Amino acid sequence: MKKSVLAVLLSASMTVALTACGGGAADATTAATEAETTAAETTAAETEATEAESGESEAEETTAAEAEGTPVKDPSEFKVGMVTDVGGVNDGSFNQSSWEGLQRAGEELGIQVNYLESNTDADYTPNIENFVDEGYDLIICVGYMLADATRTAAETYPDQQFAIIDDASNADLPNVTCLMFEQAQSSYLVGYVAGLVTESNKVGFVIGMANENMNQFGYGYVAGVKDANPDAEVLQYNVNAFNDPATGKSATTSMVTEGADVIFHAAGGSGLGVIEGCKENGIWAIGVDTDQSSIAPETILTSAMKRVDNASYDAAKEALYGMLDGGVITYDITTGGVDIAPTTDNLTEDVIAAVEDVKAKITSGEVVVPNNAADFEAKYGDIYTLDD
Image (cartoon, rainbow, N blue to C red):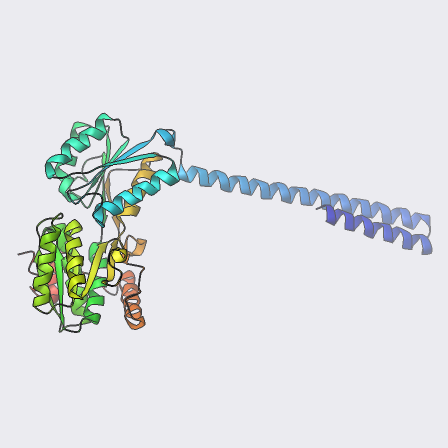
């Protein structure tokens, strides 16, 4: 602004000088007056513009602050506790990812975070009670296996806020937020990869427990395999536990004997045995929930990402700002809630391109991934056996 005013004044001075040489004192006086008036007008206009810009900036900052809200209490006093299922916090999968998201919330939001491990299902209720007694503001229960314990606690303590991952049965309770995922979409993507990569036309699927929620992984995976390779066969096994790596490994060995050269697990801690079995037999393993490539870089072909870390982080942040409501929140491929792992070291360019193409089709709605028995069987028949 100062430079603009200075330029005007310099221009005025030159005008005065030129006029004095050729037109007399009266003309010079008139030119000088006009120049001063112009300078004053310019200064006023620039001042108004600056004030307007300042006002807009302050308004934008105010709007952003209002959008985020105000913490319900000092973040350093806000406490979020997480109760694992029997897979444990170091399962390399579901529970571990949830805890990583909560740790991120602790670092970025300045809140207190903690977890309690459940060795058996008998630990669910006392672990929840422990956090209630210690005055935790939000308790996150990891997995549908905690559904009954969560309901009992939520009904007993109506003022206590809960969130539960992978369970929608508690959506009727106003103090419970159900965090759900379209996991069939991510398992479809890795199934598509398996169908393209297999050389034996036999691939495997190992599940931790067969139920409505977990079978979504199976429907998506088998659908992806068959869409990529109609000639491929999918061998299937239910470990019936999330903390039994020995049985996961045994199931893998049996599938290898039958000719499988790619095996996907959705089995929590039991899946670590699947990965070990694949490594020992020199075949591809597909991880779940997180990018599991670090567990066995030369064995993990890819992973079906289920961003439970984002869900636990979001729940903690929204609770801190008083914006976490009861009901169901669903994470899908359009929101980045599910996806294929970013590590692509073991995938060819052609496979990566094919996956990106089918992912775009899912996002646009051109491809609809089945997540229940009726929709799956309508297109593929009764070839998924773990829901029998």
